[in-house]
Image (spheres, one colour):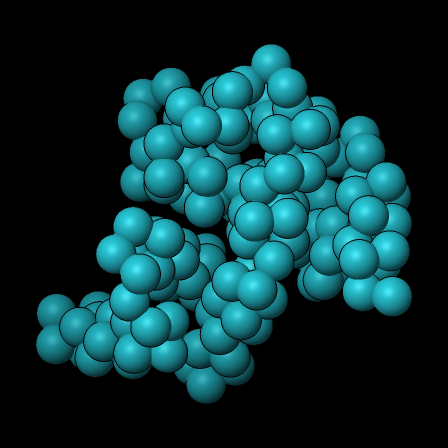
Amino acid sequence: MKSRTRARALALQVLYEVDLAGHLPGVVLEERLFEMGQEGQAELTPELVEFSRQIVAGIIPIAEKLDDIIAAYAPEWPFDQIAAIDRNILRIAAWEFAISSLTPVKVAINEAVELAKLYGSDSAPRFINGVLGSLADRENEIRQQFQKGAG
């Protein structure tokens, strides 16, 4: 797995646990980092840990608004029926390309599909690709929605 993909996977694990269990994000992140070291996985560089932190810190305060936007721009997928893992993959990709502008759209979608292959159901990659394709077509509109909310 590529290093930035591993950083996204870490952020996904944190967001998933925070989403389902309501645990504190900073504590969950530190626990996951510790577990990575205990399991003999290659540790993330400080830059990649910071990237994971940026994703988590960027998404948590706006998760509800992200969810509303995903639901509005991808209405063919009832949001309340989206699996928690898929919901968080969508949040990460949408945040990366439309809010933070850290990642080009195509890269964010490809990375999200890779995460869906690793953590989602058999149909998750296709589903994630479809939803993000709808969102990517509206990237500027989504960005404007968040800029309005910030003002």
